Amino acid sequence: MSGAMSEERRNDDMSAGPLAGLKVLEFAALGPVPFCAMLLADMGADVVHVARPAAPPDPRDVMLRGRRVVTLDLKDERDRGAALNLAASADILLEGNRPGVMEKLGLGPDVCAARNPKLVYGRMTGWGQHGPLAATAGHDINYIALTGALDAIGNRDGAPVPPLNLVGDYGGGAMFLAFGVLCAYHEARNSGAGQVVDAAMVDGSATLMSLFCRMQTQRGWNGRRGENLLDGGAPWYTTYATADGRYMAVGALEEPFWNALLERLGIAPEALPSRKDRSGWETIRQVLASRFLQRTRDEWAAVFDASDACVTPVMRLDEAGSHAHIRERGTFVELAGSMQPAPAPRFSRTPGATRSLSARQDVGAVLAAWDAPAVPGS
Image 1 (cartoon, rainbow, N blue to C red):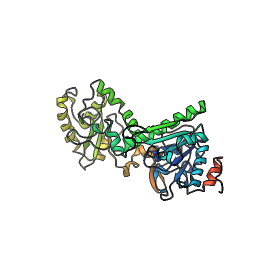
Image 2 (cartoon, one colour):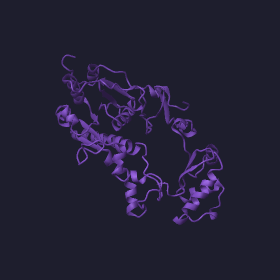
Image 3 (cartoon, rainbow, N blue to C red):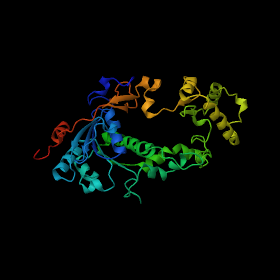
Image 4 (cartoon, rainbow, N blue to C red):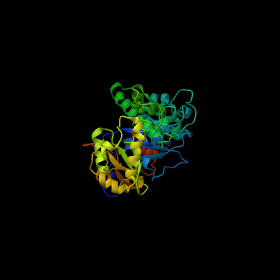
């Protein structure tokens, strides 16, 4: 891909990045745990991924990049001992099982803390470690449904629309897990004591709704989907279809940006109702929709290029890397034959790097690399 990160950055060793030297033990899980571990690995953490014997990791999996892999059967006493020895030398442990599973395996927080008092034990679940739903199954859509996030997303006259699994799994889950374990690690460096981080997607997604809690208190959010400023209700913060069936995204919230939008659309401000009068919003929407239908997406993209109108083309994932801005920044890279996002955020002195998933390694070699006790008989 043109503009992709250089080969040197992609193939750098484990010393690259602001988290170089951090040892992270990741037990195979779904969704948020591997994404969190990917973020840490991108920033230089030495992440050892414990794979299940029946489920070897796919080297094409974007979220598994940057790991060393060992395969352990945690129901086998010897393999379980190897996992415990790795935990004894790790700085951070990540797991995403239902509450109580790791305890039944003999790898719960208390057992690990007895071997490694400084260990930060990161636990990722949907509902959290306690509460009436803690032991039940769920997915992203369920967690965000209880926090008000799902109800707020979608058209006024339609049902709530799942925002992929970005809000619960990744925004409210993996990002808060990463934040939590790094906070606890920072504290442990001062106190000498680790702790358990209970990262629940239901808690994280609720935190992501902070702005809308404030807006509701200030009567800026009426509680009805598709009728508010940031949910597509306002005709200056939504998407419009173009002549070729594609879309443009409009975010002209402030008055100068709104004026720039109208100027490039060729619409006189006085020809529209006042933006302050909600009864005129539908008229404004119809006028803008009609105008956007007169040209293709790329034609409108050229009209609004380098303007302050806050208007951009809606790109498909498979074409996002071709946009001039995305290409110039190297926002996507090519790794293991696929387009992947580059590490974020950027660091001026200790940049992160993308590294391919390592082939399966002998657990004895990994234990030695971490100065961890060897397993008897290995």
